[in-house]
Image 1 (spheres, rainbow, N blue to C red):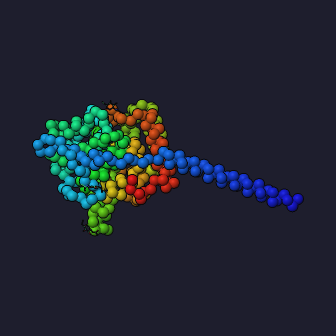
Image 2: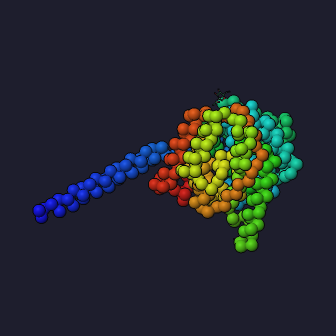
Image 3: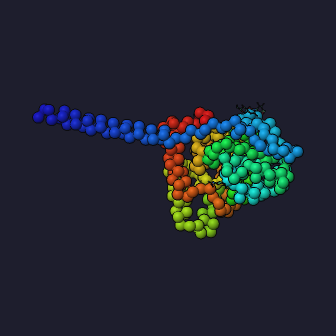
Length: 341
Ligand SMILES: *[C@@H]1O[C@H](CO)[C@@H](O)[C@H](O)[C@H]1NC(C)=O
Ligand SMILES: *[C@@H]1O[C@H](CO)[C@@H](O)[C@H](O)[C@H]1NC(C)=O
Ligand SMILES: *[C@@H]1O[C@H](CO)[C@@H](O)[C@H](O)[C@H]1NC(C)=O
């Protein structure tokens, strides 16, 4: 009779032990799977720390890139436009035309465009340099090309571009020209508003990091989205749900390829980015939130452009995988927001 109670407790202890042991095994397994899939961006090759432009004599020249982390050298440059490009000869001409027309009219001589050619095999680099000279008649340094020796992915291209801008602000803009370039004025206005608010509390305007992002959330019920194929809309809603659970909750459109940063925001976010694939936008926003950097969403004009480089099925699966990896890697401390990558 007496031995019954201890035996009962003993059994219970064994069960509890087993329970915790299994939890530890499961967590350790998840940890190693996340470690396995976590991203370690490659170092840039030395050629990728230089840019190509066309000098006064019409010759291609190579120069070292400046660093966004250094003090701004040319304070005249208000806006740097970073355009990640992979095999874009068919689409980028139109995008550049819109951008350059706008910039020449509204910000004359206060801009630069940085094309990051992500290892294209269709010679996107030379195509852009040629356009800058023959079609747009640009001055040296107005259009710079960073040419990757080896493909990295869109996130890697955006990162390398943003780390080396001259401008007070930097916009990354997709090469397809889907976002109407003139919308950049709305983004800059918002940015200046945030900085002015801060002006009352701090001495230096640009000390306050801020991110202003284009948003297509207002278009979800318009024809542009409703008339898309069932499968694309299904994927879109599935993706939004996924981002809501694993990524960021307060941003309605994380994926719009039209995002503006000031220099402080770049320095506080971009060096810490791991993700080189399509889901990199979410990591940028997650880092901004961890660091309490304000993110303002601004509705922009947008239209669908054919020729997307995304393979719908394969890339959707990769994005979902990467998103879970990002979330868990930060949770487990595999990714840290204090270590420069
Ligand atoms: C940018 O930073 C790198 C590494 O710190 C340095 O080697 C390079 O000279 C810098 N570039 C310029 C133009 O100062
Ligand atoms: C890029 O362009 C090259 C040459 O036109 C082509 O061979 C290659 O398959 C393209 N890659 C992709 C992913 O579209
Ligand atoms: C503001 O910026 C100037 C030069 O950029 C610097 O000398 C000064 O120390 C800064 N002020 C504060 C409060 O950080």
